[in-house]
Image (cartoon, rainbow, N blue to C red):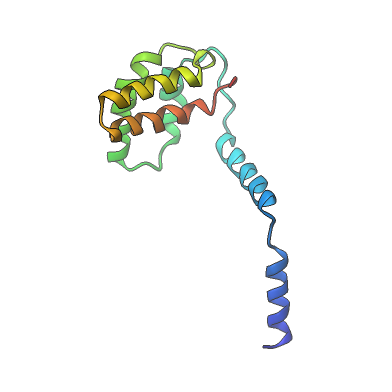
Length: 128
């Protein structure tokens, strides 16, 4: 092993981050990716408007079959109840309670699909 190898090893080792540093860096990347080029919705935007105008257009990475299932489940089980409400009026507890009640009636897969879809758009709310 020559001195060049040792130098490469030392430089790679010095790039290691502490756990808290890595988490902070990852959070910054996620925040940037989630908001890049998109202003947060205003307080009066309803969940249905957000779903149609902001959330769906950004989900271009979904396969067509996945998109179809999520659209059907979300429209039937979440938008039916919360679609007309402004985002700021939807409380996480209220949404979670509704999703839990779906889990009692429907299959685990369907309720999990609703939960993933419903809790995703909430991250863009102007007030938590």
